[in-house]
Image (cartoon, rainbow, N blue to C red; front, side, top):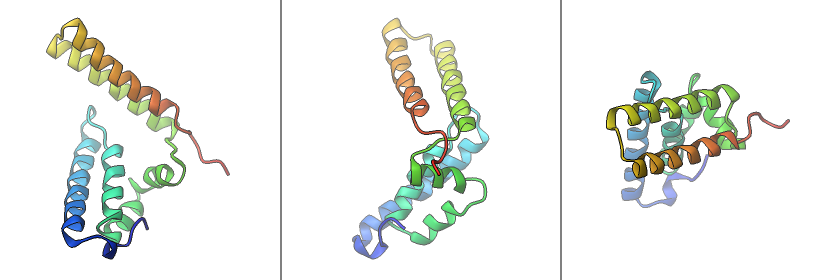
Amino acid sequence: MSDPSGARPAKFRALFLLLGLLMVAFGVIGAFLPIMPSTIFFIVAVWAFGRSSPKLETWLLDHPRFGPPLLRWQKHGAISPASKRLACAGIAFGYLVFFVTVGPDVWLALVVATFMLGCTVFILTRPSGVAG
């Protein structure tokens, strides 16, 4: 798919493989925790597997639950409207949890809000569908 595994030294393939496996673990956790994303971890996993294990890259892209959004992102940079809503709601909820539990100073609240707003803008400016 991305890069034949033989084109990289074995130590780099091993590091990419470990990174991919770690990202899959985070993605699975994120699929069950409402305040933790999952798709971004799977996107990184596909990228890492593309540099270490074409078999695992294919497995993830063909996965019935996680494959379609990954393919949409990989081929078109697209995020479905439902995923955008969930991501933005998760960001807002995450900020609320941060604000209530940490009680940050104004400067920290603004820095975190700016970062999260930047993430939200990025998500909302991605294509929603696939141009046919």
